[in-house]
Image (cartoon, rainbow, N blue to C red):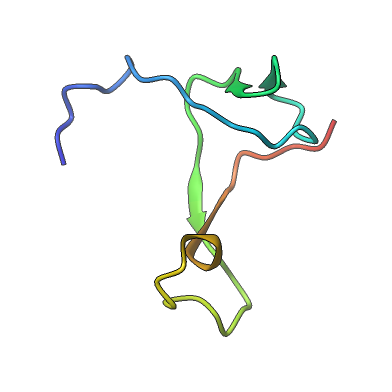
Length: 60
């Protein structure tokens, strides 16, 4: 993985219940923490929805 884009990428997000969601499809954070799913037997299924979640999520 290339590190040439560190600090220059944007974060798209359509989770409207998150306090950092702006304009409906943009994350205001400069960095997010992505974490593996915990406590589910679906982890390692290969399905993106089962593999990870945004650890930086905060409800509005």
